[in-house]
Length: 302
Image 1 (cartoon, rainbow, N blue to C red):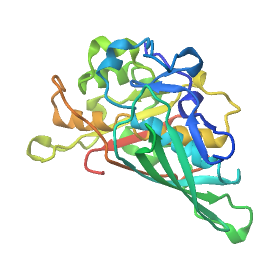
Image 2: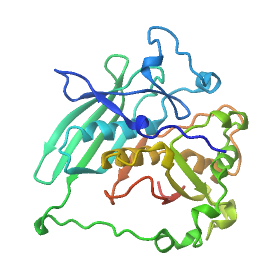
Image 3: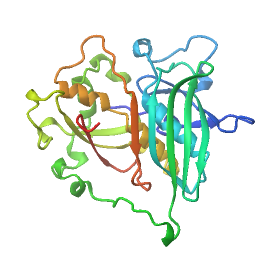
Image 4: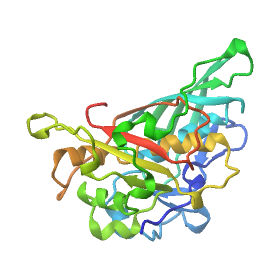
């Protein structure tokens, strides 16, 4: 059965003391494959005694979801609590070192009556920028003058009829691990796979309207799933900003595996798979990640 890591430490950042008031570091040291290790248990002057040594030795960088979620969490701390994130446009510049802290330098670009913008640079190794993002925030409406259209909350059966009117409980609990293996993840490493999310990935015969991919270049695949933060990994008192940061983290999960599945052949040898640019629009600031979400990833959409 899948195993889960705590959700909040994945996106937690700590503000450095004065005078660097808008510089944050990840509260815990993150290493590849979604494992989380407290800094207090690590001697940063030497090599890290990592409990996941085999995958750690093969991995080249920090998983991008950490950078996305933590940059949103850092930027959120520089705006009023009345503001919710509404957009994220980011670029991955260089691979990050999973054995070093990441410093998030937040620049306050603008603060208006309803909107604020922040530039976030993720820095390691002195002044080397590994990741940069523009994060936009919007003040929550408090009067009729400030009303902004909000996406209605729909039952996923109604919002995404292509899910076949299914239910998360109808899908195999091990479906995410099966998808990982099909996409090229080594079967012998499944025991170390950790993330805070509970996935229910629909089998291929539930994928409504799949085209004939034999003549497409690139081939197409649409992966549909239900997903939520596993209830055991997130406190009920977690602020809405934590849910937003976790949603940014979630947006990078299973992206590359969708393209692997489209190719209809597993990754069996040395390969390099990376994301260069990543954009997210947050349309429903009241969404909670401990509720089931309908998730669809299509290779032709981005």
